[in-house]
Image (cartoon, rainbow, N blue to C red; front, side, top):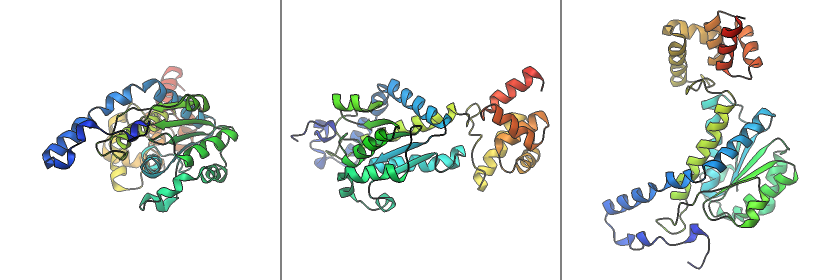
Length: 303
């Protein structure tokens, strides 16, 4: 296709897909998708470093800000939007910016990705500062809107990273603090990066945001103890977590959550050590929000 970017190359295995049966199409796409986990694993060191950078940002009062266009932008906004209900984080802690604004989430505005100045403007509007981490998402690695945002973020002192699905140039490796290059290979439909590149991008974003939330005390064991109890499903999950951890019945779990004003973490500390909500919150604050640290410290020191 006369383009060096891996995302623009033709996939020889799908060169005659227009003659395939439905089952043959399914089998081919499935076979290609099975390559993604290996491609992601080859970037495990870089992904872990990204988790460290996001963790550092959170602990210093900063934010994680995703920037992308098209599918990449939508995936960033999706991941950001899942953080408050899953981990009880403030909406501003993880933010997603898509070229073209909210309307681009449901209606293609691809031309918006060509403006680096608009990407830069978003960094100014969000008042990006030195303790923020800005992750650009661009399957092709070349989206002007994304690079405009990252350059301005760097100028404002923030740490920056780029997630792409093609081989990065030396310039990119030198310009940003972290570069995650998930080489998933040519798409089944040439250039359609909503497919393998999009799936791999989602996998990486899951790792980064979840990893940082775990590292900042929003998970106990593998339970999402910072979830928001604002619907029946989540209230039920919260009660079951407290029942499991504290070995109490549902009635006691429900009462603890009510006394804790919906906070599972406060309810856990209250129930474990028979203290009031204010005392429990104070202990959690001292432990940086880690329930396990409160449990261990209390039991060791018999507070």
